[in-house]
Image: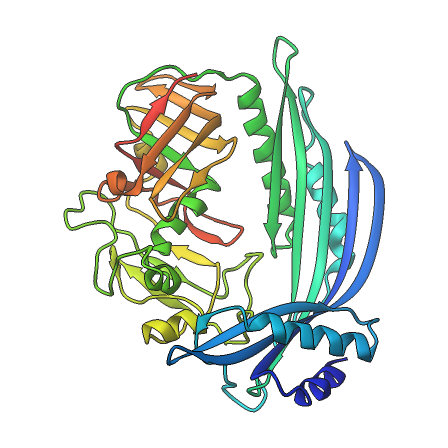
Length: 430
């Protein structure tokens, strides 16, 4: 199919470039009702994604339009030709300032391969249920998806790179009954390339314990201006807000007003200084890849160091607009841990939120917040589980006085502090 597409594209006169992404995905899936396997299935799917580029002039400026379509392996030659022509026509209506395509570093980039691990899915699922040992709580249902992705990216400039990657996605619901026999349910996800039974079991046990806290939680009290601790997976969304300030796309579109050398935390920093690195490979990350979707090789880049922007990050297009070296698009981030351990971070009166119903962040305004699903309130002495109510804040109000835990975690696309302590956050009781 690749050679057929290349031949047809070479004969298409009304386009100025093209890119093909070929994905071959082998997938195994398991579905459980409590501990009983309800269904299992496997599939192998090949997909082709074609992007065509069309250059045109208007008002003395050169533009580059693009259009992406999906090519099915079963399509006939005349159908593919029609799709290409329709895409070329559509691309003329996408009025982006001209930008270059990725060029190859070598004639053919090295392949990056991982051996199949699909036969390990059932043992990984068993590891989750190894944590299901409590009388009051259990795993209500679960779904597991383990896939092996083989991706090849080629373009009209000569890029030809490929890689293989294994990824596990699991979602499950935990249930816990409190002393009054009322049930609480929480939904969880695991996205990882860490195929460790101990890791999966620990995640399951932690989920059950959080559900137990939720089942026995009281309503969040109305409290005054006290520090808020955000811990667990919500650290990802919060740290991504700071990283977005150095995004070449946000800078170009003037959503971010920062320049190289600016401090994203302001000039009067009272707490920890942030250091954030983007990294194509973080151990266990679901999103670790050697190339971005345009075929640009990825590398580790220090974006923010001690609060100061050292480099803008972004894909080839927006980096070209800013006249900066492209880093490629990647989602992995490493955040340097802080100086304070969790016990000290949790001293005095505070509200800690571990789970939100939906933690919302706005990279444009800096606003963040959400409804509290599960957390703890500490009056300086007793720490009690709470639920309900909400918190809200803005980066400008918290950026110069925050404390990061020195305890770290690696989850999804993040490696960094487990928790952060914030001031100037609004709290609404339930």
